[in-house]
Image (cartoon, rainbow, N blue to C red):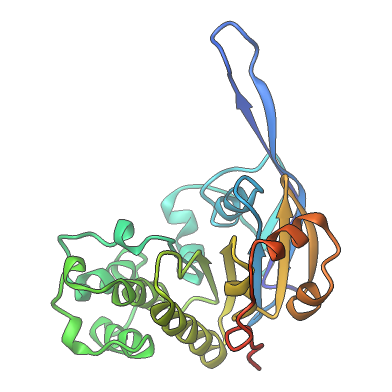
Length: 266
């Protein structure tokens, strides 16, 4: 049984162009199916408007779906009350694209990493968990009392990662985790993600429009286009022999794939 499974997921939106016209139905997801096994690293790529964010919000139980089924460890997932989803929020953690928008500027790093532990009522010694989480992302106690404005872009992204892994999730969902970072910081964050998943046994769903990012972290990649998954194969196979026009377009948009970063970690 897969850790996460989305089966024939459909999501429709009503779009109104004028006040006097009947709303037009836009199909954001069209019978999308995706599975992630325990410990597996899966990339989800596609151009803007392909449906990546819509699927992500459905998997995170933020938005409802109109048809299909999403399950985690065999349990059906749907948006619902905070109390009912507390177990799921603990086991599936989200790393946002822009950490600056997710880190409260009034909070210290210590408080930021402790927040999900407190909110999700995770038992244990929270101070020890915070130290462990910061250590795993390569940050020490020196940053504990800093505010987000006192962090570099790479440090802020690592704090976001520390927040996410503090609850010891089984699945980490990373949305464009290195977007906006320069190449050295991007490489550092990618290495941290590899260590977290390889050493901690977490599964990873990495969402990106950039195949080079996914190639450096994920053993399998699904390509989305117009609300559908058009390819879902081993990343090395997909890069060497793309079958769909959308995959070829994503590859054509990259002048050169940096092979040193596209290694497939064991």
